[in-house]
Image (cartoon, rainbow, N blue to C red):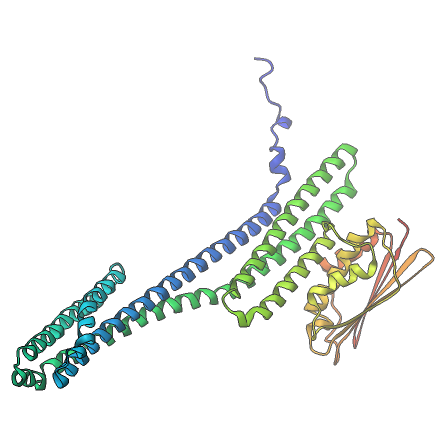
Length: 434
């Protein structure tokens, strides 16, 4: 059967699997896990807050109904006493009104607690109902006796402890039911507080995921650049570039989604706390600035300026604060389009190193970025000054050093780093020709 034999070299792994090697799959998994975690957190927090609001509404209505029942019993007793003392039927008005109101008040209370009432709460509801009926039955008998002229019998009934005992038991039952309802509200509030407390640690985890995604993305960019340099065939080089661009766009899209999730969670956290709004706004502003810096260093910003000062300020902005002192100075220099992304990567690497290990990692540190241009070349000096003696010079070359030297070499420039007792000085020299 000719034409059906498959040669060994034809049994290849599918092209899509070759492109999506395990590192890319791991990156997509991290981003997907972060997005799903953020959505689950927001959903659970919304549900808990909704339950708290519903419990607060119910508790308020239950307390009002209990106070109505207590007030009707008190008003009925007051009207009875006034009628007994004055024999004037006008004083029966509070008693008659209370007699008409107490049954609807008890019915309303039963309706409010029909679904979530505990066995003890149902028992208390039955006690309140029976005690209210007993109290008004006693009031009815006394009023009837007064109306029929039986003042002595009415006085004897009033002076017994029967009515007072029923009233005290009714008040105790109402007070206990109020305490149980307030305890239910407190439980719902504690659940909401616990859910809000989980937001901050989750934000930290999401930010770690973002940093991991950025680091893996930078590594992917370096690996793609190395693949382009080693390509021998023009067609293979074009395919490699298309794959790298697709992965970079996918990465940037998902990283932006992560920033959007973090911003949404931060704003949701301060939604019901007006006092925290200034702090929430500052956090949101810093996260947005970090997104802008990421867009510039990844070449995806729609408004990235070709001015050197704008590039430096954009990269530094997410990390600058009262504690992170820094100064930027130099003449207006327009960067060639091809220099913006590599130089942005270099500045981003220097900035993150300063935050982790350098001047901005300890109190009293100071960062100065200055530059000058002439004869078609740019000279940029990055100077970090720290208080006290530096603990030592880093040994060996890490990924950051490779990134720094590779990006500068890509632009045809040079970089020199000098570690000294008071800090670090980095000099970068680049051609400005496009």
